[in-house]
Length: 309
Image (cartoon, rainbow, N blue to C red):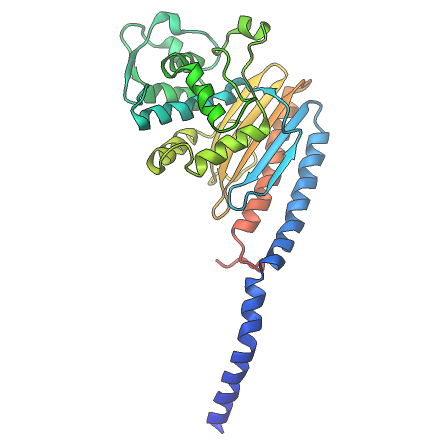
């Protein structure tokens, strides 16, 4: 009798196994469930953007399957400091190829470097303080130091940054002036980007299409320095965010790769014509939180939606 029961159990398992595997492996079914969550996220992002008095452009790119949300994402916006992502990428590219500026190259601080705005470089002793390009990059990213940024622009080359962008098919994202150069801005030489192009740039970097693996990891480690900006405000503190915010009067921006375990994503939120800059900052944080909610939920779930710890 005991042997009969065992045989019956084996037969039942063999009959049920294909159905169970089919249920777990049904990618269309999983995609349909993800669609529900994705559309809910889209609705949230659109509602947040509509509550903002500024013009808002949003791009959110799933770095796992390429699905994207684009809202007012193809117009050019002033970048403020967010353009520093492109400058940092070209610095790493030149260092990796040993063609141009290198991270270890040294620079002696000059009194003429000080341009105001964010940063500490203007307070360093001119003629006595020596920094490497890596140091300058860290000041640029972690403190948004405009003086350090301008030195790097001259050492890396504005035209080479733009050539990198053109090589990736990005035609509206451009570095046209130094930081704090209001005369150039008044003359129409503004640094610009679109949300779509920023997440395309970040996606290409994440995929290793710009740098090799070691340099890519180093680039994102640098871009993750500190917890600054708007995208990070409402996210859990243990989530790694590689971002660069930017601000001007009426302009608040942030762009990032958010390294959600199992489901990283790129996001760019650019705002302009803003009447309430604090409110725009808060809306960027809310949009990032809405996006994170989707990617976190999908990233920690099995195909059927169960979270197994």
